Length: 324
Image 1: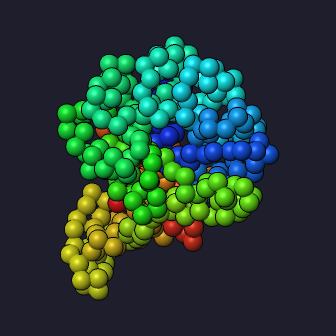
Image 2 (image 1 turned 45 degrees about the vertical axis):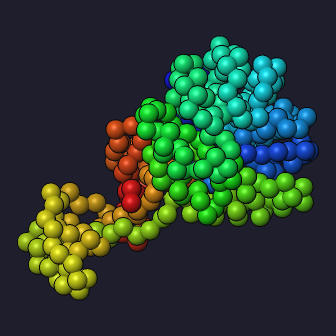
Image 3 (image 1 turned 180 degrees about the vertical axis):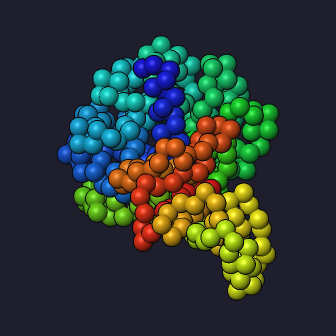
């Protein structure tokens, strides 16, 4: 794979945020599982080499949902790397750091995310030219506190914690800028797959994404004539018990109401939706079929989206995403 393609895969992993780590015992479960994950808003799967059907399962998942980002997990040998690539794997994950396996993946040009558990592992990863690693087993090793401590001397490294990550603690990880994604199993538990409860998997997947995104109403923008702007803002500020703040586009009549006198958008105005990550929210909504105005997107210093308008209007209002 090209460096450009690998960069795009890393960007997608970051955008998806939660990477389901899957153990499959039957190939027949692969396709409906892929459908459930994509419908739920997590178009990614790390299929672990803990069973003999991992190779065929990856093929079946990608065939069912070409938009699914498929990777191989628990990769311990060069032979498993070859098997995974033959099955169409787009990234490789391992529980530990085996320099031989890492170098082999690099020779093959595939994204590799090896596991680390201590400072010595991180130094070996840096020596191999890596800046993305898995932290495993995350909770057993002290979780986000340990990762933050390790980030002190290793400022360029970013982590994908896996092991013990669940709906109660995932935001502790994902809200930290040093975390590019987390690995999770709670939405793809073995019993759910065995009992073919794919509707439940879809439900748990969607709940995980919505929880990750922390979607909330940020503010409402209304369009008014320029001469009415300040007075209108003052009235809203009085009702909302806030303060008037002038901007380049008009006024805020408290933090909840933006009064637009210039650069107006939408027939009546706009609605600002706050999310934990615009990049991840765009990935989620795009997977659900929504479109964004590319000219409206702005980016942070790392190249990730921090602001974006949806295409079209709802009830005369345009909508945009902004980081909380």
